[in-house]
Image 1 (cartoon, helix red, strand yellow):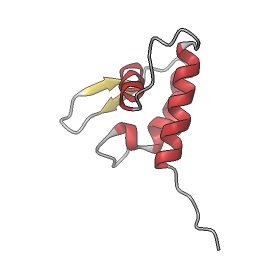
Image 2 (cartoon, helix red, strand yellow):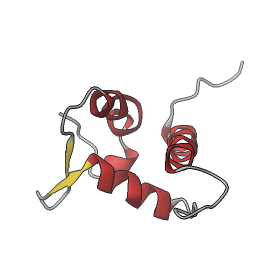
Image 3 (cartoon, rainbow, N blue to C red):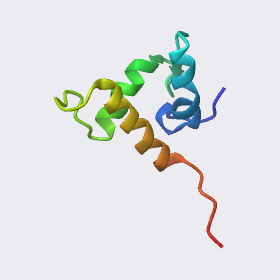
Length: 83
């Protein structure tokens, strides 16, 4: 269970749920109001949030989703300060 209010800001959504979904499990995210959002719907929302073109003719949906995962991971990932 994650303590994040917004699933798209949660490392479990970006790092773990993608692999669980790829194994064929039905991944559902619990939103702040208690409703459920499918992982696919969360990814569509992430693509819109990052202003990535969902209908990009030069890239497949998989490539767009991979880009969205990478960008969101960079935004929410922990980075150790350089000494």
